[in-house]
Structure formats: C-alpha cells, structure tokens
Length: 267
Ligand SMILES: C[S@@+](CC[C@H](N)C(=O)[O-])C[C@H]1O[C@@H](n2cnc3c(N)ncnc32)[C@H](O)[C@@H]1O
Image (cartoon, rainbow, N blue to C red; front, side):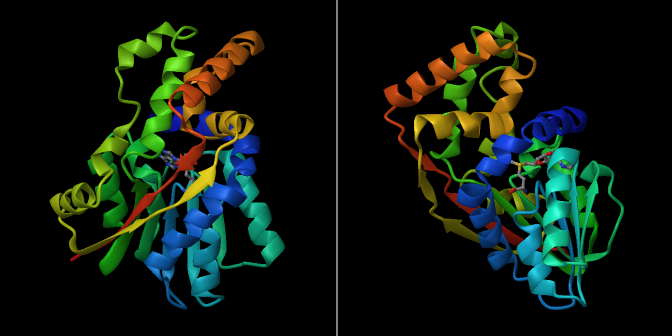
C-alpha cells in the first residue's frame, strides 16, 4: 500500500481501530514485545506502530534509560499513542508521524514491526531498510498473520465491496503481501533471504468472538477500510450487509488472529 494512502486509510480508521485495541492490537502487541524482549536501556524502533500496541510494552521494558521511537504514517493513530505515552509518563517513548521507509534514526538494538511489512509497496526493500537501522547484532522482530485466520475474512470483505467498487477486481485477489509471510517456514526463509541470521519463529494462537456488529467495526478499523474509502453511507450499508452475510455463510463467528512472531539478527 502506498504510504500516503495508508496514512489516509488508517487515520480515518482511528475510532474503529481504537474499538479493537483492547481485544486485538494491545494483546498482540504485548505478545510481540514479549518475544522481542527489549532489555533495560535498549534503543528500540517500533515501525508501523499504530497507536502504540507494541511500543508501550517496549517502552515499559526498556525503562527510563532506554528509548523507543514509535513511527507510523497515520497521524490519527500516532496522536492516540502520544496521548497514552503522556498519560503513562513514558518519556522514553517518542511518537512520530512519518513514512518509516524514509526513517533514518538509529542505530537500534531492536526494530519491531507488527502487521506492517506486508503493506510496504516493496516488502523486501522496506524490510531491508528496517534491518539497516539496526546496530550489528541487533534484532529485527516481525509479526504477521498465520494462514487460515485473518486471510479468511479479508476476501469476504473485498467481495462485499466489489459491487460498489468494480475497480477492485482489476487489482486481483491479492490485497497485500501477507500471504508471503503466513507460515513459520515462509517467514524464516524470507528473513534468511534478506541476509538475516539466527532466526527464531514463534506461532501464537489468538482468537476472539466475532459478533456481526464488531465484525463491521473491524472492517472499518483495519486495512479492509481501503475497499470502501470514499463510499457514501447507502453504499457502505450495502457493503456491511453483504459482509455480515458473507461471514455467516462461511460460518465465521470467531476471529482467528493467530500470529507468527519472528526474531532475526543482523550480522
Ligand atoms: C495493521 S496496522 C498495525 C498497527 C500496529 N503495529 C499494531 O499492531 O497495533 C498497520 C500499520 O502500518 C502503518 N503503515 C503502513 N505503511 C507504513 C509506512 N510506510 N510507514 C509507516 N507506517 C506505515 C499503517 O498506518 C498502520 O497503522
């Protein structure tokens, strides 16, 4: 996804994104930070930080002697993170609204990126850039969705929008590159192909009940929102109805947000 487009989609999504923070983004962010294990005093970059789901636990872990740069292109989410960091008195956590692909801070001990790399227009080049910000021996931590989970919902969301947005068909079935990193083996091979070493990969099961109303909030609070950007209220209502019906038809009353978290080291 073009960074400017991502900025618009995710900033517009801030209210619905926040609705899913407690049940989705924060617990998964805490899991990523638990795998990344930032140590007191370490310097961390949280790339594609959203509202700080993994940046806040990282800041608590590095403590006042460390630093966390939390960077996201969506100002609407970054502002939520800033407010939380201020409320918690986390002076070591600095939020910046920027395209992380042109971020030049560092060097960092840890660069972590939750559910972000597959939005980069070139996932390999973007992730190489993140790795280049590490000190030698530093660790890159990447979280992605496990196959058969989120990937079941997104095509239903796309099909629901298709009658209102026929141009979506021109982009093909693939909405982003998440299918390149949806198994532990794929993630390991991919990170290795980028020249990283000592790679460990964890798979974490994570599910939530999915009420139809909450499913629609999830649609509007995540990347699926891109399918309906700019649609008027009556068209949105038709998409919502088709989406909810599609989930019911597929028997999806549970959100499977099972996750892969990988740690890889720079030479
Ligand atoms: C699915 S959200 C995840 C947010 C956060 N990491 C979390 O887990 O709560 C993906 C995020 O990637 C951000 N993003 C996508 N491309 C970006 C880029 N080039 N630079 C910075 N942020 C980007 C979006 O704005 C969005 O906030």
